[in-house]
Image (cartoon, rainbow over all chains, first blue to last red):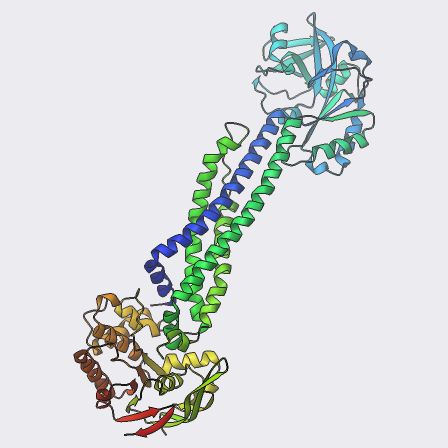
Length: 386
Length: 224
């Protein structure tokens, strides 16, 4: 017989009341877990989608109304009139206020060339950053490693009739087709990719670039702020945000997140009230019992320990059940809430431990006053018999 | 030196503008090993006296000294410790904890001691055997008769070998036959050296005690 034996036996005896308390607290915790997990899963879904989209800021030269045809921009027949950006200017992107949000900068140089009597668009890229940014690319053959390697879009490879490992001569210089891209359905299919320094040399644009894609891939990145910051650093360039839709979705998600936290606050408050009222009722019902405890020599601290241990046990159970129910709820709700059909549920140990910790804290804090009230009961009044 | 000395104890209850004097200067001395019954009509102050004696009810004035300790000069929690170590209570309505078995009820005073669980069980079993309930250790209170519940309450009161056993109308809820058995049990415990102070309104119970203190209107009317 120890103090916790009393707590455990009391819980066993008052099953209905304790079940009510557990369910009350569990529903609260489950609601919070569902809201938090949904928010996180939806954020993760959006972030993944942004990863798939690739860049979200495009830097192009101010071209007096002339358009290019890349990334949704028309290049047309004015290629040779366009202005270029100095490659060295891109270093300024690293000096903007939100530079830590920049995950990749991919400079490109574009220009028309003739290969095997076909006019093709040559794009000079840093293969490493390009492949990192365009994770959906599937390369047949191998990824280009040297300046003499080329990567061809699937249509370009067909037109030029080459396969991985074949040789191509451009302006008298021999190159190896390291890889061919699988069909992307975008303008990439008809491009010939070379390393940036080599393309700049072939196009006579050393040290210059035609455009740069910037990836700022994180939930809630201040894209519009970053566009302004980059535009200030590169006054001769046109800086524009792409993926406005995704950005808009992120804003909506942010609002949902705020709503979730507000809901969580209300739920925590209601949960606390349930615990408080139930524990207070339980203490009042047990007046005689507490009187006996005090009469036979239990200290106030002993009484508090009995009450708080009961609260802790119920809270822990409610925390576990609430987490499980909350994750179940989130799993059911996610397909209706997420952008894409294959959104994944985010299992986060922080949420697991956090929800159990929250339940425990909630239970103990809300039971503190009832426990204190119980411990202060006058044994004589509590017993009434004496 | 007497085991218990009550000196000029007064107790007043105030309710709004009304003041009730439950005890009006009570002086009692009880020796170790005595069996005392405190008798009186309802409202005579006997239950108040027992609660004052039990360290649960601060007197308005006066002194209660038990085993050389001035009870009400002890700080609050020390007084609780004193109760745990020196006093055993038997309540009128038994006040057993309904969700604990007989042996668990008896172990209750030991729950706050540092004894091992086995020692607690052994002490509780011995106490229950002393009151004749060795075969009903695992029964819940609602599975026991009134007399048996009273016995469990007595076992709980004696499990920590208290200096004094305080009982408040222990036969108040029992039939006459069971009352006699319970009183015989108190007598038996007293014969084994246990000091017993019992509040009762039943004159027949006085026959089991060494001395009867009569109270009326909060004052000792006489001792016999």
